[in-house]
Length: 470
Image 1 (cartoon, helix red, strand yellow):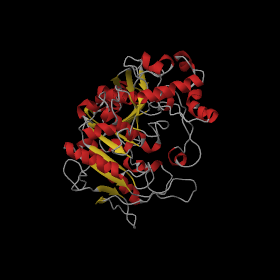
Image 2 (cartoon, helix red, strand yellow):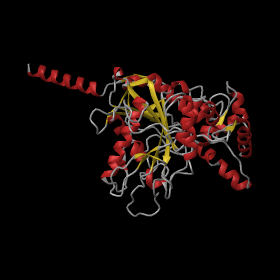
Image 3 (cartoon, one colour):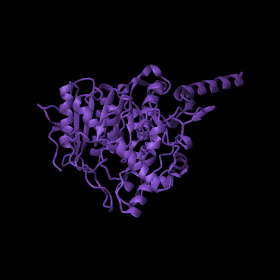
Image 4 (cartoon, helix red, strand yellow):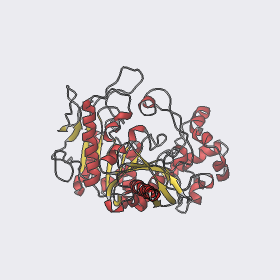
């Protein structure tokens, strides 16, 4: 009798554990996550969302994921795309203080943080985060991008890696000739679209609503958001968009994308110069050799060569620039949040204003912000100062606990306010929440931003008003 009772107790325990951390069936096979420090929040690390883009799949559109057998325990992040190693000051001590992970061409992996694993009826709002790094660096599991607090605030967060640099955006006539769409380049962008489609097809298993997906990115990630709300392949899959330090619109029609033909010519010039004059030779070259080719060419020839390492206007995935589409009212008609930091790269305010005014014409709200908290330091040299480009990431993910900076209570309070605004936007298309609040859309009549800052007593002092001057 005692043995039977013990067996029943063990079975009940296993059933409870399975309910808290269920095995999910997704594209490719079965997967099980790992619990986080936050009760009820599970993270799934390193889920493949496409086949490894290696060998004959280098410089091709992402292909369906390769199935696996058994249950994949998703406890390890997938390798990021090939890129230069981080070293020295600036962003290295800020975000990459633990060193770089192993880079690989086999990089198409995503991560999911959720408070509702295995509960498709929950239909929680989903946010797809696109990391920055100039299309040549970064990955989807940097410490500032941790999604535990996001899930704690009632949302499902997905982050991912995509192909970077020459592996993600090379254009070449031979590559265009073999493509069924007669284009080349934009492979990294197509990876982003593949991740978005994976979310559409699989996120219900994680408790997310596949029809309520907000895309969000910063710097090159923000410019990626701009391409995705422009692309006919993706804009209908999007319920909202957040553009952080990616600029807005201007009167320059060529902004945000170079033409395909000119990029193809540059790509061919580089590959021919390096001796890779056939596709077979190009695909046989090592990633290390390819990543350094442009710099070697300029060093040895003393000539500038604009080889594509960012999206090009190809008439297929990216038929026109975001700038052109936004001015013509052809981007996704969804709510937008857009902003920058006080000490950001360049003067972004005029473009943000113009974008919001264009959205006002379309009858679509656009909420503008400025992050003006100049981050505290501990006196060390060679680190970033002020409200620098990317500084808001520690706050809107509320990931300050991973940072070395001497934050005060006001910083944690500000982070709580920001992550609440950001997750509210993902839930409702409104950073205030279900009801109207202090943060109003930027319009011609009310051209004000939500300015996030602390006062002289290091207390939260966020309020609507004009952008603070640098």
